[in-house]
Length: 640
Image 1: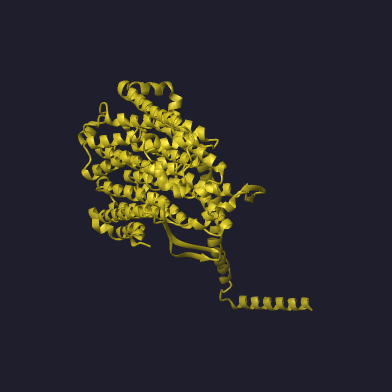
Image 2: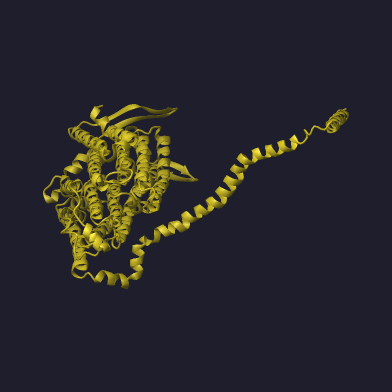
């Protein structure tokens, strides 16, 4: 195995260990090792990509990890077309986030610790995508969960940040439980957890059923559903979406890394990697498609009215991830990964652009206190504009090509849910363009609505912040050019590159129909931008008037359909009450404490009473001896 391949995850791991141990001594220079390590990792990832492009696929075990009975699992790497793409996404975005963080986190307490955690996050995601078996995937899966907990709760003295970190960790446990059951079932049926063995024999699942609570269930469907549980949690789809918006409590660079390149993309990667299993279960694919469409619409409607700059982008991420699920659900796995690829750059740019605005606004995050920042922050404005145009699906930019590919494949599929997903996806494209430009207009145009102190501090961010923005802007524009469709004169190199791993469904719609579908999505985006311009530039008084007249709907969306309150009422509070009344009082205090503390107390009480017999009175001793002899004679007589 090439040493450069081993270096891809090991460099961030070494950076994490060294920075955590001695970074405190380096002070303001603690960022150098993590940045150099991730940049070298990116260079090695590029080398791996070009090696795969030339036809070299690596699937090699490094050493035996677990050997027990029939279970034999190694630590190994699989570097194919899918892995190569993910390596580029993770290392490139992580590199820019590391550099950006030098400016954003300057002067923060725990500066070295932050960069150590970033390195751990990068290592965890790299191990997830590099693994050649399910158990190594699960190791990376849980490691990114740990990393997100550490980074979301980085400001641990801040109650909301600590709660958000715990919320992300706990909510993901629900999905991970199903995922783990899926791994158990895979091993039970195949006797192996290695991809090449499982996927090579996946045809054995056709027609195979499993007795589940007295009912016969299709084996492929059950495995796919259990694996999908994990994907729902990590990629924040309904009903496990609630952790992702709250993750905004962490530093903005963390938000960019989570939303663009690491944790939330793991669920999409899982479905794409396990496509041979999912392809055997049309029922699961229909479920993925419907859930993706519902989540996309659900999150987009919430994003329409949010006032926290980062929450708008956070709900945008939930919605865009749902597009990826639609792509995978209709069997167009390469389209789903294509949107993952383009989304990484324009979403990282949006988040880091938000961070630049927050810096310029002296840590203000309410868009109602912004406005007119275009002149003061020109680089942030133009890069943010490019990201907004890209996510809105404006032709020629990255988001247009990947989103359009998914909508085409949703319309093209024979799955029952395909046309529904296409219709919802087109509607969400309109909403996405609207809330993206609503955010842009509220931040950068119009009159400044902040305080005089904020106006005084308003300034463009330093170069260490703006240079990563400009580099990401290049990706937000050009990343989609790898998948230009034939209708626009391209060859869709993206689909051809990933076809050996993910396949590529045949498009059976006519060129005229494809052009009509493309035109409808473009029209949806243009109308969304136009409506945002009309409401927030030409008639800025109308949004508040609409909020008053549609007060119920406005409050419903602003409060995120009260899902958090519902979960709090039916899950959190009953669980806490049960824990206090049953677990704490009965199990802990009565049973455990009763045994642990009660037994010594009983022995002590008995010893105290026994000690009183030793009072030094000879008459008492004679009485006890006489009584004992009498009792002994009585026992002997009864025995006779």
